[in-house]
Length: 301
Image (cartoon, rainbow, N blue to C red; front, side, top):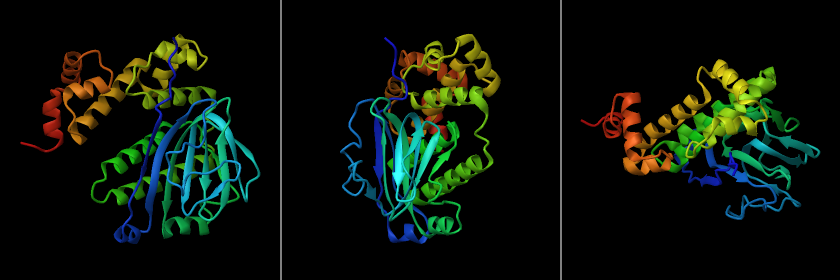
């Protein structure tokens, strides 16, 4: 049976903001990811009342939001933007105090990353037209680095460490700079080849806790595996299977250093066939056992 890639489900965080965070000039209220399957209800009812909305009536937020679509398609409209189609590779910029609505199409669903933020720095960007209400749907293409920034923001929000808000604010500015650069200079127009590879990289990132079969992935992208393997390696420097392996290894390193999960748990989470296999592979690739790497990464004696 074919796998459903890009179906991580739902992960979101709502953050507490204090007076010191506000003095920084930019702060994050919420960040998350949602995989909405075809013919599923939208929006999900797990969100606080200030964020949940009826798509027919729309809503007004007190914050800015960036909403990035990496799979599927849908519709967006606001009090300054007539109804417009949004598909994978496009993002929506939402403004505080502005009526808007959006939804995935029933027949396709969609995957969305989003981050909500406030502050006088964001207001300044709007006043100087870096963010504009007359240009709310931006074409950025499928971009793995942008997905990575959203994923990192979700992790930082979940860890809830000291100065997490300042870290998140930096991520927001990084996102905005990247989005403006791509959309203004049209560097997203790298053609179908580049977009296919970026899509494949995003699918691998979003399914790092699963097993992605490169041949099946090529079939999902409607391209031949031999062509996919060659072009992917030319584009990234890695064969698809090797690239996915490196993603898993990177995630394993992060979990070892940033969590207290056991090696067995991490091995299971990342879908390795056994703890022994994971241990042997990790040692071969890094020169450390998993526990040695954890100790080294945390600066322990």
